[in-house]
Length: 269
Image (tube, rainbow, N blue to C red; front, side):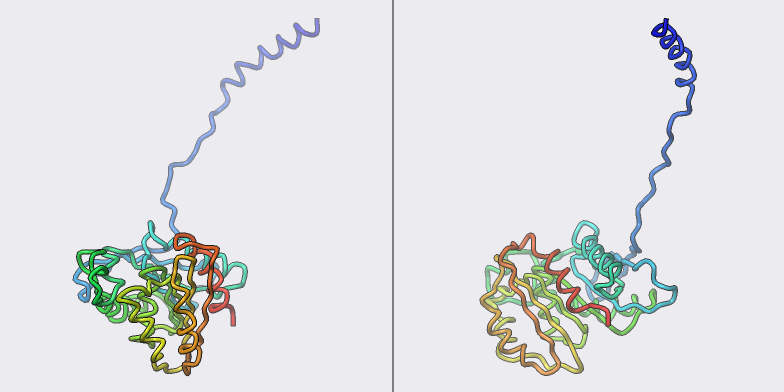
């Protein structure tokens, strides 16, 4: 009978099926997108971890411009900014950049300048260390990057929130340190808005060409934009741009605003 014949055939196949070699999987290995190393800093009095994204597909020996970023730990903003640069370089909307992420130890100490506002000083045991942090970048980190990697003289910096405050403060105090400054929702409320007031009253002296882009979310300080545009928009040598993102919050603005800024300021030449 056909049904019995079919059952017998299936039964004969079962031993063979049970003897088939099981599927195997390789052992897990770390997934790397760049380099990570530490540097002992005299300026900061501690050892700092540095994470570096090296663009793929670039001919060996090609010098690359460098983007520095505070909040550059693997559990901070490093991975998503590296992703933006990788996708932008891949689709031709952004020039390839070496990304240098500085992992935090005491974030609120390093990214804030001095303050006369008592409430500001309650956010951390120590604040006001931005100049020491800038000294670390200028005198220790940048020379180490130039020693380890083939780089051009072009430098950019990107940061959000307190890191955005540091970006704007650096333009005000040491405008020659970077060529492109990108500040996402910068915490310009620090020290009673003194940095914003200073820039509105007197833009920094610029040698050559520099670019500053500021983006504010609905949680930011868009009311400072008119005075900044009136002052910085007329500063010789400075390309100032500003964009409001009322549909984004402080927690959501970094990724979309950085993508748009990268495409506008770092596009292929």
